[in-house]
Amino acid sequence: LGGYVGFQTITDQIQKRMLQRGFEFNIMVVGQSGLGKSTFINTLFNASLLSSTGRTLPTTPIPQTTSISTTTHTLTEGPVRLHLSITDTPGFADTINNDRCWDPIVKYIKDQHSAFLRKELTAQRESRIRDTRIHCCLYFVKPRGGRGLSELDVMVLKKLADVVNVVPVIAKSDSLTLEERAEVKELIRSDFQKYGINLYPYSAPFMTDDDSAINHQIHSLIPFCVIGASSSFPHPSHPQKLIRGRRTRWGVIDVEDERHCEFVYLRNFLMVTHLYDLIDTTREVHYEGFRAKQLLALKESSA
Ligand code: GDP
Ligand code: MG
Image (cartoon, rainbow, N blue to C red; front, side, top):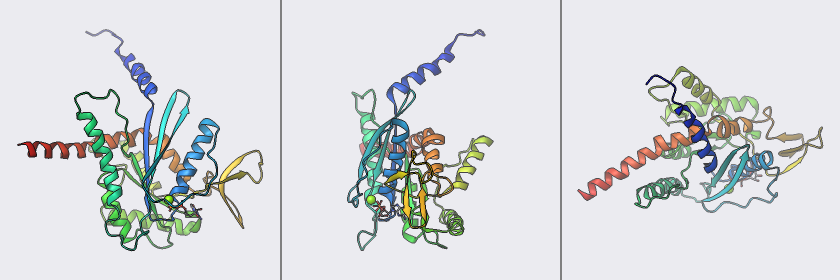
């Protein structure tokens, strides 16, 4: 059996099927209240909707978030349909006592795994299970010159890193000088090491040099310095172009200008370079871990 049979065309069949289904990609934002999480969601959706469909969301004031809620939009690029969902969470420090403030968030993430598992285990399996598992959790760190993670950050991040891919971002980075940004980035990175918080992308035992190099490059960008904005206005020197940003007394911050912040790098990381890996890692690391534990518990309780 040395000749060419032609089964390599399976890649076209796989591609066709995947394109028909579309992809579900679910992001969650977590952090203290007032750090711009809801604004960031608006920025990410608007920037993506504008380039993919030409429409924008209306500019409305963003109310304070009081419950965990998810917004979904379907984006289309060429033949690919992406069902992008972003889950907003109420910030901590809304209550005096922050003890176990992460519980509802961790529970939400686990609930999605458990819903998926339940559907997988039913006899009459749906041919296609809607995926609501969180593929990436963006953790918003308060911008403070000369300071890294707070004690609360460390506690919450440890809990989150056990169940989901966590990517830290420095919120409202317009409030830091360039020197402070570099310093805070370094401090946060060393806090991750110091407290043993497992950061995505994880290193795997059989990685190629290329994979390690890419991971290393991503780790050197993390945490991303982001700025959020919910309004857009004409570009000061090219009025026909709309920019998304913040107007200040000293000028305009364009969130999509990489000289101003790292929003574009983060969007590229999420929606271009690591889109599939985030989905795959969720399935292979986080969901598999959850599934194994649940099935073992089930076996023990029936024995
Ligand atoms: P959340 O509680 O984390 O959801 O925060 P919100 O998105 O509700 O934002 C709280 C306030 O911060 C609002 O007044 C926003 O306009 C403002 N804000 C959001 N993002 C930024 C940012 O990147 N820089 C600055 N300076 N302000 C921001
Ligand atoms: Mg909010």
